[in-house]
Image (cartoon, rainbow, N blue to C red; front, side, top):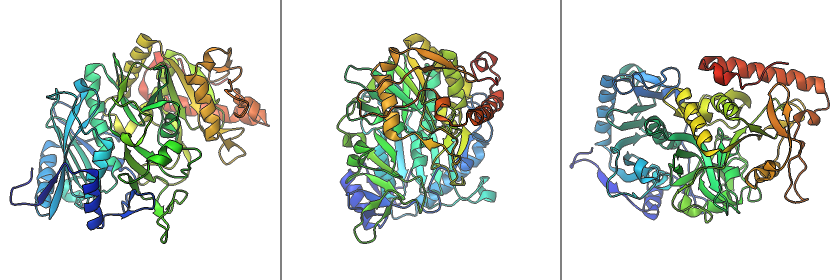
Amino acid sequence: MVSSTGPRLYKNLSQEELLKIALERKEGVVASNGALAVQTGARTGRSPKDRFIVKDAITENAVDWGVINQPFSTEGFERLWQRVQDYLNKRECLFVMEIYAGTLPEYQVPVLLTAELAWHALFAKNMFVSFSNSKESRHPQWKVIYAPHFKTDPKRDEVNSDAAILFDFTNHRLLICGTQYAGELKKGMFSVLNFMLPDYKVLPMHCAANQGPSGDVALFFGLSGTGKTTLSTEPDRLLIGDDEHGWSSNGVFNFEGGCYAKCINLSRKNEPVIWEAIRSGAVMENVILDSLTQDPDYNNDKLTQNTRVAYPLSFIENRVHSGHAGNPQNVIFLCCDLYGVLPPVARLTKEQAAYYFLSGYTALVGSTEVGTDAAIKPTFSACFGAPFFPRPAQVYAHLLMEHIQSTNADVYLVNTGWIGGSYGKGGSRLSIPSTRSVIHAIVNAGLKKVTYKQLPGFNIDIPDTIPRESSAMDIIPSDPRETWKNKDEYSVCASQLILEFQKNFEKFHAPHIQKAGPVLL
């Protein structure tokens, strides 16, 4: 990839070596907790408008082309790939990492990363799998170039801005340039697996996963800010992973070797596992430090609400070391409801699970995308992660239904948003401890022992009561109507949300699933 007379290559360096070089090159500073603190410049989140897929014989009829999956020519990719290689050949040094995406041998994809910055190599070492469980991978190696200081020219390079993220599925290449935000690397390879795995009847998922003392597995789907990482990192359960997994006929496996947790408003009390994992070797993005003490100010969103920390799973004591486990007993959809009309928890049928999975309703809370305003607003993102799924959403929804059918997994919709009123109009957001008590009732089978009733309009089953494990836990009304002072206002807001659901779902052309959705009274 790089000529022998070109830059000095640093290959497969350790955490300590990469940290030392990053500091020498002034790529970041050490915070008081020992983590490397970096800033990513103007782009503090993903750049979805700059994401392209080469349209060729492999992808033409397989990709869901449109605003999310934008087509790119083979010739244009080759020109830009070569241009970036020429640019890298003039650098003083480069960082090469041989890593893997996926913890299960039969689906593990080898990755050869060439990075311009040391801290990006450190990020990759933290976030990807550093070992192979098989002598020889069954899948081709992906070549990834990460050149954040190379700025694209929209007219010359046929892109939309000075940054680009391009996928070549035929030749197994990923090019990232013009952005320092490391989430592009993580989500880039996630998109690769999301395209590849359905061919093997494996459901790729934007979800967290953990395992209980008895071996029971729970999945936590949701967009950023809805609580995947927070709610899956429990002291009394083993973490499998916090964001990306596959569900095969044999069970669940992590795509990653690390965690990429949000830092905004982080506290030791509410998120002790994440708090303790932020230490030397971890990388914090866009977290403001005190100029004198170098203490992180997790409540400061001066640069962005999408502050992040990347650390290896080895920094978490309570984890599943293999990165994979059995089939899930509980599937949890986390949604942040701004209307305040959804219940704290509801049990879904298989068809309802497909409906809410395709809908992916939640709120943009501390958006992970650049160009998105800071205002909290409702959104629909198919599969709880539309920007990362190249194939049509129905492909993933049908796989979900098949796995639920074959495993008899229970599916729950959990509201981590507002109750008692809408956002900004008298409602209050459910606290993390309150939502944890709901999750405990699910994973500890408490919700299997109660009776249910149907919530009109949404036609989902809600428990008569939510069991509490101790008297110290909050009492949470299971019926959202009970939390509203004005029941007529509840009805108006519920109707507004139902109409939003119906309007959004029209694009899927799936009448058999649409019947499981909400209806106006």
